[in-house]
Image (cartoon, rainbow, N blue to C red; front, side, top):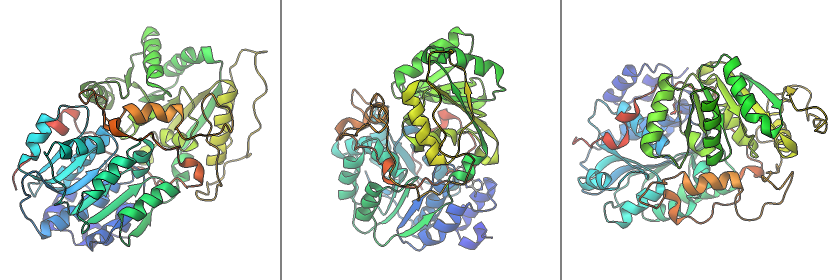
Length: 483
Ligand code: AMP
C-alpha cells in the first residue's frame, strides 16, 4: 500500500501530515499526488469527502516550495476556483493546515462579504488564492487582481459550477490565465459538457477516478414514508422526536420551503435553523458552527447551501422534499454515513410527482427502497411498482440516458433550455447573494439544462472525516502572512 513517504514530499509538508495524523493516502490521493508532482495536468472524478483537497493541495505546495518566489503585488501563484463560499473556506483551511510549517500567504475571494478587505489582502500578492468565480472577476475588473502570474489552477466541483451557471465566468477567467500553467480539474460526475470544458482547459491530462458511490449508498439505511402533502410537517416533527437523532440534515427544494419547515419545527418545540443562499454569511457560519458543536441538532437546507458543508456525525438525512434529480439524492444521503459510519436516510414522498422522482432514484441506485404508507386511506392510488426487487451494486456508467423530471412537469416532462425550478433556486442566488446587491451569479448566462441525464456515472468512495474548524477562523479573518 502506498504511504505518504513514497511521494517524497518536502519535509515541512510531511511534518504537517504527521500533525494532521494522516497515515495512509486515500485512493484519490494515491492516484493524483504522484502525477501532479510531475507537473502534469490531472482530471479527477471524486466527491468531497474523499480526501481530494489534499490530493491537489499537497503537490501544489510541494512545487511552490521547489521554486519559492515572492508573489508580485496583486497577483497569486495558485488559483483555486470553487462553487461555494463554504467549500472555498474549507479548501483554504486545508492549504493553511498542510502549509502550516512554510508560512504560506493565502487568502479567500468569495461573494457575500464586502470586497475591501479582499482588495487589501491581495495588494501585496499571495501565493494561494481560493475564490468563487463571480467575486474573482469583480476583483479582476476592479484592478485589484491580475491573473497573469498564475502557475497552478485548480477547478473544484466542476459539475456543480456548471449547475450554478458559472460556466461563462470560468471561461472568462481561464482566458486571462497564462497558457503555461498546471491545471488540476475535479468533478464528482463527468457528463459531456464537463468533459468538453476539461478538454478546453487541460493539456494532455492524466485521468484519475475513485470507486462508485454504491459503497456509500449501501451503508445507509434508507426508507420512504408515503405521506399526504399536508402531513409532511407533522411527520417530520414526529420523526425528529422518535428517531434517535444525533444530527439531522433536512432537505427542502426551495429557500422559502426551508424557512417554513424551520418555523413548523420550532412551533412543535424542536429547535432548528435554516441555511440557504438568502441568509447572511454570518448567519450561515454561526448556524454551521452550532450544528458542528451539537447546539443545533436539526439543520434545514437547500441542496446548493448544503454542498460544501462538511460536518461529521450526521445520523439522519431527511428529504422533506424529494429531489427530481436522482444524483442529488445520492449526494444528499452521502451527508450521513461518513467515515465508515452508519446513517439513516428517510424520504417523505407525497403525490404522483414525487413518486415519479422516487422511481428515477430507485433506477439510479438500483435499490427498491422500503416504503411505509402513512397516507390517509381512500385518497390515493396504489404505490408504483419497484424497478428492481433487491439491492444490487450500481453500475455507474451503464445506466443509459435518464429522464430529468421537472417539478410541475410530471414524469418525463420535456426540458427546454432553462434549468428546472430546483436548480434555478440555487444557481441564481447561492453563489454570493449579499454581494452589494449583486451575487456571484450576477453575470451568468442562464444555467444550462442540467447535465445529469446524459448517462454519466456518479463516483465516490468511503467518506472521510473532516474535523470541524471553527467558522470564525475562516476566510475574512485570515490575513496573508509574508513568507
Ligand atoms: P476532502 O475530501 O478533501 O474534503 O477531505 C475530507 C476529510 O478527510 C478532511 O477532513 C481531511 O482532513 C480528511 N483527510 C484527507 N486525507 C486524509 C488522509 N489521507 N487520512 C486521513 N484523513 C484525511
